[in-house]
Image 1 (cartoon, rainbow, N blue to C red):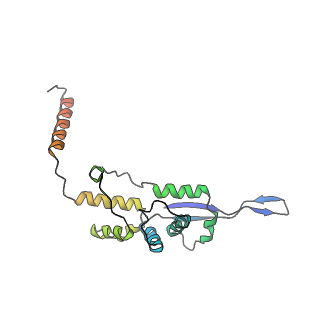
Image 2: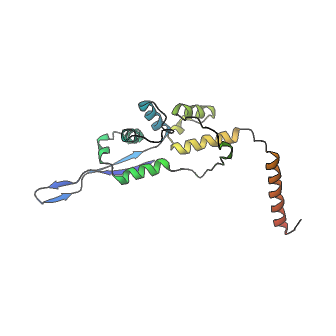
Length: 180
């Protein structure tokens, strides 16, 4: 979850001839499957595979991320560059320490990922629906872990087996301080 503070415009006080800080509000945002689903329902296209989004689409996604009850969307016209940068950084953050080796996916065309496909993956792997409120990257990582742990191990080619044997022999020679 991301919490940002939005500061309204400065106000001019004609009695003192000075500008005063504007009001501010705090809003909580969650980049989740729920937000993604709302956005896709509005724009009828995949959020994850759409590289360039219009200003309207971007602002609407930020609105879909709001989890603060009774938040007035009028505040969004006061979003600062720092607010946008914080939101962008939050959306693109990994939110996990899990990593994957993507050697098997090189050169393959990937399918378009939509909210419905992610819900399908959740159902397939018995992931509880409470997870739809998680940060989206964390949910996708959990799905990848489920796929990795439930899929059959890939058979090694002869070259891969030979390389693995060479590495094990080199490791054993190093551990035993021998040359052969």
